[in-house]
Length: 286
Image (cartoon, rainbow, N blue to C red; front, top):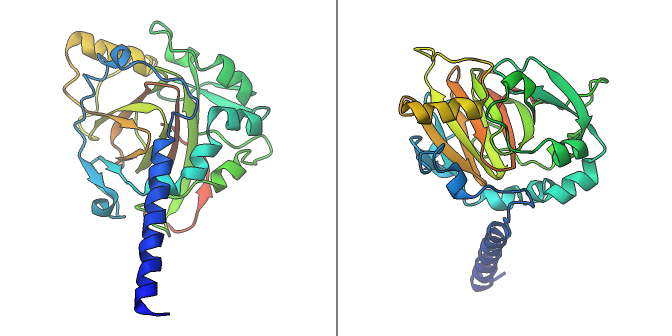
């Protein structure tokens, strides 16, 4: 093959890849999941304030980090195009609607569990959280994917998820998939390091270093806690950032964090054990 022809093919291939990226980005219509108007979340988000450093995928590297970071990767839309299509509301219900899922109470310790079908949860369980409800009486789907037989009922869905480029290929990773309604979330808690990628919707994050440990009521919902911080004017003592569809946030080891879904939000988290090799699928709190 002549150099001119090889160059022409390379240019065409690059143009095709860029076209795929543009198509993937442009058809991101929220996956049929309901969105909340910006004005309705402006107060709790501090007008969309983000204190977390934003980086490109090329800048971030694949090692363990000591501070949070939000990553935007222009290539990611193409990489997770299939997974994003598989998690559109209609597609998810058609494929997995009759599967039973495990909901966890939205207190710090996820102290209660409840079983229902995915269809029941999507149709009845995604209503906006009542600010007066106690966290252990509010249920949310995140992390629990293993049924009574020890089988991951979402293994086919997980197989269509492309690992984030900045998660080491030889690291031991536990994946946690979830869907939350508006103002659902998890109060302050800690665990090991990892990444959380927003697939559809928006998620508000609050983060603080391991010391000093913040004071909080573990049975107050993330929404009530965040709203009270705004009312008292104490919402400047932690990092916060809205992580939108197509973005991923890194949570360092043992950092305190709380999350609040602003819309009907779909996400996949990767809990990374940087010291071990292998791979597994389990659950976690986010």
